[in-house]
Image 1 (spheres, one colour):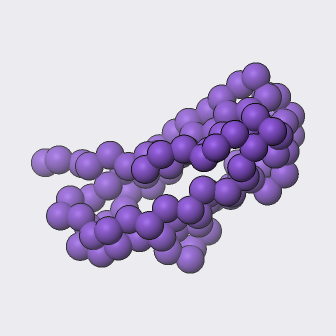
Image 2: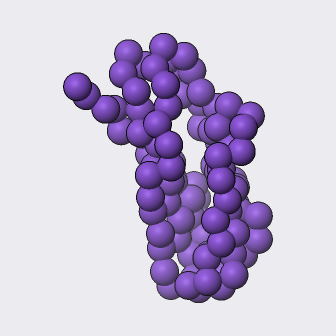
Length: 97
């Protein structure tokens, strides 16, 4: 689904319906020490994280599984700690059986 341009604190993604479940993975890079991010899927907060690692460290992780047969709206946002080097990414992996 791609990543934001450096310095942007918001990544919105619209996902079309899929035949298979999708694994939602988010990643950050270039956040200030003490930064916080927020993830919302289909209008429901799925979690927030705090980072005490400073701008040189990046982080990524699996967040949830999106159910098949419907579209999804994803918002990934920096709540605090945005820098001119901040990058946010949303990646979807198709789970196969």
